[in-house]
Image 1 (cartoon, rainbow, N blue to C red):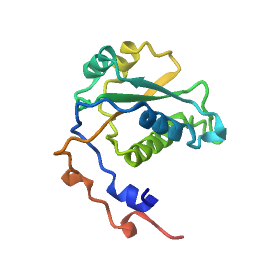
Image 2: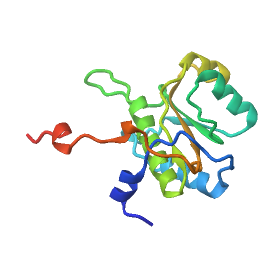
Image 3: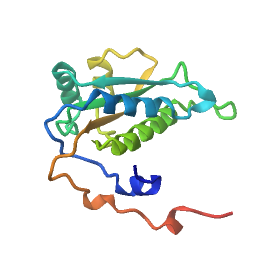
Length: 170
């Protein structure tokens, strides 16, 4: 087991996967990590579709080119009818909650030896239609997941800004 900072530094967006199914125990660990994620007022508005059937993966391919032929894709959504709304400005934070859940998924996947990439490049209307999502359920991200291919490597975009460029002390 690696320490958290090493895990976070070594994790990168995987865009090339082995043609190998994800073991149920590894998938369950990823899903459990997301279930443990904090959400506004603990409303837990995340709604997640685990897509691994050929039919489901074909639906994903109709919604985005960024599927990377992963053996599993998590469709991470929020139910806006269930999420907390900030009273000061009426902001519904369901998408933020779903993002936190997705981050937990990505980090636990890395711990399990799996690769992921965050995908926001999809047609939300197509996703809603393909998966018959209820009106209050909003797709937030797709998370292709699987075992990285032998040639998988971070892209040039993987670099990080120096911390003094992103953090302000007040």
